[in-house]
Image 1 (cartoon, rainbow, N blue to C red):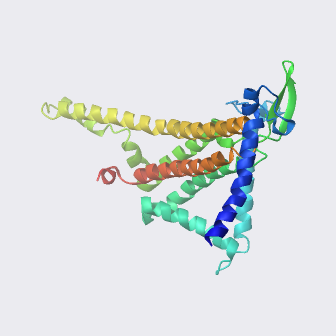
Image 2 (cartoon, rainbow, N blue to C red; image 1 turned 180 degrees about the vertical axis):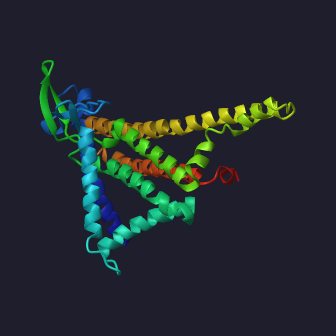
Image 3 (cartoon, rainbow, N blue to C red; image 1 turned 90 degrees about the vertical axis):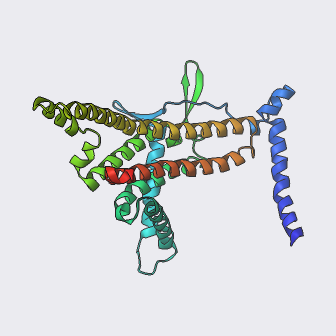
Amino acid sequence: MGQNRLKILLFFFIPVLILFMFGLIFGPLGSSFLGKEPPGILKVPRPHVALPAEPIVHIGSFSITNTLIASWFTIIVLVGLSIFLTRKMKLIPGRRQGIAEVVVEGLLNFVESVSGKRHARMLFPGVATIFIYVIFNAYLALLPFFGTIGLHHSSHGHEEFTAIFRAANTDLNVPLSIALMSFFFVESWGMKAIGVTHYLSEFINVRQFLQGLKELFTGKIKTGPMNIVFGFISLFVGVLEIFSHLTRMLSFTFRLFGNMTAGEILILVSSFLIPLVFAIPFYGLELLIGMIQALIFGGLTLVFGTIAVSPHEESHE
């Protein structure tokens, strides 16, 4: 049994090692040391990193960018998968329906473990949508046609290449749009759970300040100034709380954008320096990072949503 495993290991390891050495010696990195041109099969285009999304088609003043096409592709894949997995649902699920139920039940249990069963049904759709959308954006971007199929055009006397598909999460607008939806979900959950007036009073609480003014004008010199001071402190704390809610969008946006962009650059550079198999470990790393970023985005949305749907006094407890 041990010998068979060793044979299988050598059967896969030796070809990979040969390909790695071939790419290292004759690729752009090795060829630069040898002072030779790499063979045609190993000539990889120099990595071109553009932070803004690149337009593919213009419809009037509206530009369809490569990241927008990638996000549409993600939506089409998700809709197609949901239809395929849930078509002809039965009381006793088959394999396809079973896969869908495992995913939904796993995410629902995750939401319930944080928010409790009381609010889980309300928080689940938003959290699950964010998690699935982020992770599919990351994983679909690893497909071979991302960054390789595109348009060639001349600009300033030299030829440029624009990929039709580019990882959606590497466009700042996509993480920002998801962060805006997360912000909208959290605030709407809080208003729905504890009431609009009660929820907003946690940010703008002028009751104690007005009470202090009233007491001051009615001659209650002992309690009036103190209520005014504490009321002003409550107002200041409320402004800080509003600011903290707004800064969440920035942290969400740049965390996802930075990690996904860095991963794409890492794969581009590794594929350029040593072609063939050197980039494979980095693809595995990107699978892990995509999962982590989806968990962080969805998990923080869940945590902030759980805090929002709990009364202020209860959250302190």
